Amino acid sequence: MWWEKPGHLRTVGNRLFIGEHDVVELAEKHGTPVYIYNLGRIRDNYLRMTDALKKAGFREWRIHYAMKANNNREVLGLIRELGGGIDATSPGEVKLAREIGFEDDDIIFTGTSLSNGDLEFLAKTKVLINFDSISSLRRFNGEEGRKVGLRINTGVGIGRVEKTTTGGLEAGSIPVKFGISGKAIDRAFDLIEEKGFELHCLHHHVGSDWVGEKIGRYFQALDNLLKVAEKAEARFGGSVEVIDLGGGYGVPHSAEEEEFPVYEFFQRVKEHMEEYGFGDLKVIVEPGTYLVSDAGILVAQVNTVEEKNGRIFVGVDAGLNVFNSPALYNYYHEIVVCNRVSSEEKMVATVVGNICESGDIFAVDRELPKIEEGDYIAILNAGAYGYVMANNYNLRPKGKEVVVGRSRSIF
Image 1 (cartoon, one colour):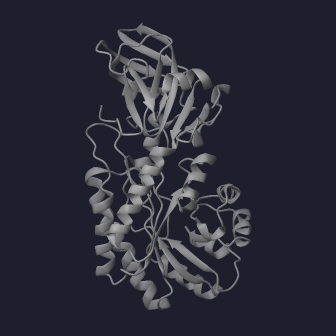
Image 2 (image 1 turned 120 degrees about the vertical axis):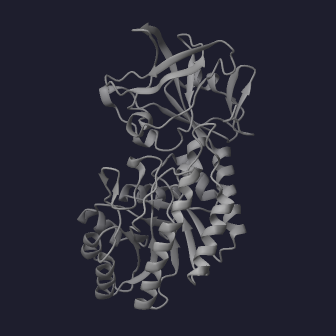
């Protein structure tokens, strides 16, 4: 199977295993719906990115995990053990990161539509803030000499779909709200000077989960960011010490997609930075999906197999309230029948959830092993933007989280 990975997802007999654990046994033990995360896979993904950054030859770099993707405490603890920092988007995320043991120097904050309360909280911390708007920078009452960053909208947006595109003016018909661009950059420079701050970091984020041919477009955005760095150098001298490349590095969702080429990607980033004379600046990367998406699965139990109007529907005990990626983004997610992984008997089925919404669908007319009521399915690539976005709509449960990859499974 294309999704099988050594030490992570594999088939034993006719059953799905994650790490050393039988997924059906975990589901029966903990109940469903249940998210299962493999810390071993997260570690592998982190170390692969670390190796790519080392081999690219950056003088200084650090991975700041985008905790909005998955804020499970065990996951955050692993990132800390590995030496990573945190990319936070709200005061709540800063507080949780601190609880895990991250210091303020380990945290970079890049939020949007910040309230006065948000800004008052941040002013009392020492986290590096990448300001997303002129308004938030103007309203921020930080001490003179404070190092700050700017989130630049480089005019280039890249995402798996329109709704995950965060750069440019518009993503299809969706206006993009993020970042400072055009003449507003000069105004931001003025405010930094007026307030006595020090421009320390330039940041951009083009979108989420981009793969394949979309990767090439990233370098147009990077060039535009480095042109802003040239402008900042002319204005402030050498105060800019950090280029924050953002995140969004994608993962394969199907056999047709390739792994993100981290080695080639960061080598090319280094070359672009050297061309602009910024090869010695510190580089920050903010992966979320890349680290945790394929490390997690969502397991649900089948309760209904029924033909309606010529189509077979498979109903499960999870809905869009538990995992909304297919409904919100129309993402394709591989579905594995945990107790019939390699069964030769097939069926074409539409897999649906238990929420009273027409859009509560995980897959339409998907070829799967023949499913029976009582079986378990696993939805793959569910480790990012899953449980963190879950809710109790229809007063249904959000599901549970189980972590494997330690000496035992952790509920």
